[in-house]
Amino acid sequence: MQLSPPLLFSVISTIRICTHFPSPTVAFSSLPKRILRNKNHKYFYSNRNNSRLHSSSSIMSDFKRAKLNDSVSTNVIGTHSGSFQADEAMGCFLLRQLPEYRLSKIVRSRDKEVLETCDIVIDVGGIYDHEKKRYDHHQRDYDERFDAGKKDSTNGRCTKLSASGLVYRHYGKEVIKAHYPNLSDDHLDLVYVKLYDSLLEALDAIDTGVEISTTELVYKDTTGLSSRVGRLNPRWNEVDENGKEPIYDERFMEASNICGEEFLSVLTKIVESDLPAREVVEQAVLNRLETDGSGEIISLPTGGLPWKGHLYELEKLHKVEPLIKFVLYTDQGGMWRVQAVTVKGKAFENRLSLPEDWRGVRDEDLEKVTNIKGSRFVHTAGFIGGNTYYEGALEMAKVALQTSK
Image 1 (tube, rainbow, N blue to C red):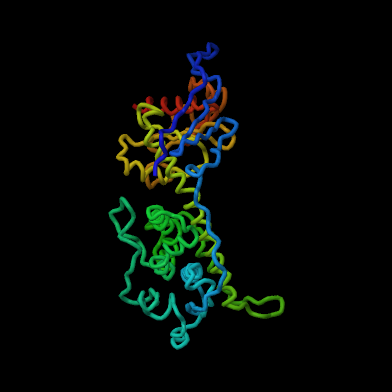
Image 2 (cartoon, rainbow, N blue to C red; image 1 turned 135 degrees about the vertical axis):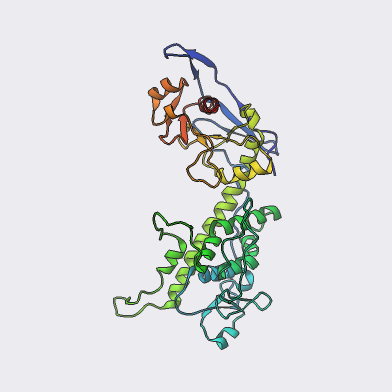
C-alpha cells in the first residue's frame, strides 16, 4: 500500500541574504509547514511546534492488538523437567496463545510414559514430527532451519531451529493472527519473518551453540533474554528465608512469562510502528527527486519513526540509484535533523558523512563554517547534524553531497 498523492512540502519561508556573515549565508524566516495527504484525501499538518503527525487510520497504525479469550484449554503441553532455557520457555508461551492450547497446563518431565499423555511435546523426546505434535531438536541427524536464508545473503541461516524455532515455524503465523486478526496476508508474511529475525533467531542460535561472532568478542553481553531466563534457574545453594529450595516449575512459569513479555513487546513494535512507518518511508523514497534533484536525500514528514531497515529494502525494491545518502526529519524538540545513511550491515560506517570541518562545531560558530543560517550542531563523528529550519537541513545535506564530488 502506498500513500497517494505524493508527499508535498509547502515552503512558506522566504530566502534572503544576510550581510553580517563573512560570505553569503542562506537564511530562512520560518519553518515550512509539512502537508501529508493519504489516499482518503485527509490532510494532516505538522510544523515546528507540532512535530508529530496527527492520528490517521492510514498513516498511523490501524493495527490494535486483540484481547485473547481467557478460556483455559484442556489440552496439555509437555516439556522437559530440570534446568530450563529460553527456547522451551518461549515455545510454551507461544503455544498458550493459541485457542487449542490457550493457558494450557504445562507438564515438565523426562518420563516417556508421562510425556505420551501430553497433547503436544516440545524440547524433549527425541522426535520431530509435526503430525504427531512432537518438536524436539536434539536428534543426531537433525538439521531444520527457518528458511533458506535472509534476503541478499549468499549464506543460509546460521542456526538450526531450537524448540521455540520449531513452534514458531509451524504456529507462528497463527500466534500473530491471534493478536492481530486484521493483518493482511502480505503484512502477516512481513511480520512473521521480521519477528524471527529480530527475536527468535537469536534464541535458536544461543540454544544450538552458534557463536554471535567468528572473531573474538570485545565485550560480553549478559543482558539478553536467554541470559535473563538462565538466571531464573535455582542456584546450586539457593534457599529462601525459611531454608526451602526454589521450585523449578514455578521458576519455569516465571521464565515463560518473561519470554512472553519480550515476544509481545517486539511484535507490537513491528505491527504498530514498523509497518505504518514502512509506508511513510516508501513514499519519501518515491518522492526523493521532489526533495532534491540528486535523488540522494529523502525527507520524512515526522521524526521518531523507524526508517533504517525499511530504507535498504525499499532501495532494492524500487531499484534506487544512486543510493540515498541523507535523511531529513524533526526531533522531539522540533529541530530538523540531517542524518547520514549507514552502509548496509554496518553500524557506524556511513555512505557519506557530513563535512569534516563541520564536525564538533555548534550554533553561531557552525553557521560561520557552513554559511547556512540555522545550523545548530554536527556530531564529531559526522553522522548527524541539526538545523532550526527544514531548508537549512536540506542545504546542509546538499553541500555535503557537493563537497564529496
